[in-house]
Amino acid sequence: MIAATAVAAGAWLGTAYAGTARLGDVSPGPNGWTNRSAPDIILGVDNVSGLKHYTVSIDGRAVTDHVERRGDGLAVVGIRLGDGRHRVSVEATAAGIFGGEIRRSWAINVDTQPPALRVAGVPRGWLRSRTLRLRGLTDAGSQVEVRAGAGVARTRAAGDGSFEIDLQLADGSLPLSVTARDRAGNTTSSSTTLRVDATAPAIDLHAPSTALTSRPLLSADISDTNGVAARRVTLDGSRFQLDRRPPALAEGVHYLKVWARDRAGNETRRTAGSWWTAPSGWEEPR
Image (cartoon, rainbow, N blue to C red; front, side, top):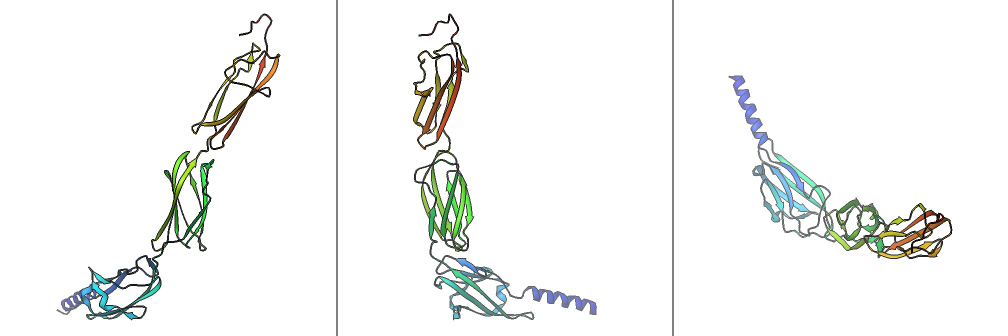
């Protein structure tokens, strides 16, 4: 009989303890951030129906009249707060044998202003590199995201607001955006168009290493996805037009040189040295 009574008493105590109101998680959390000037401040409460009495204050000012039941907790609504740090305090009494006074106090931060953003390193003309390096300044601790085409890179600003970030790129005309997001979730963005060409023109020379004629046909394929802006061809230092036969040249080594530049300024040079000789009895092409 005594054992049964003890078991029943233990079960009752367990039930009483489990049903006691207890303060749970809060949102914004301790030292958390919000970008709303009148944020909903949520206080989770286990067994909220077990609260007999509660008061809530912000920065020492009573705001209990602005508290409403919301699900398994309480919510402070409709209180406008200035940008900066604020302290939320809750005092409550829980009913039951395990009840009593409950206290909770924590700080939240309000920031409704978008972060500053200054970016350096964006080229005004063509970028002749597959790597874009940007530097800049924003609010301390802000996350910085850079997007260009399919490329994405992220970093976090240092304590003084400075940041440096590299982004790998493909050739082409790419929309570039830089976005700073501060700890409260405010964002500032900057955008432009980036022109990338890190590929030099391709030159394929067609000149024999040994020619049995003093007037071989000389040619070259010159191409670039961005377009060839300029080219220069010389034969033994003199200007020469491709896809033609030169005047009869003396026996020996002669040099064909081709230079090309694309619209972005990338350059390519190719040189072919050929030994030309005309055996006796050879009829030169006309």
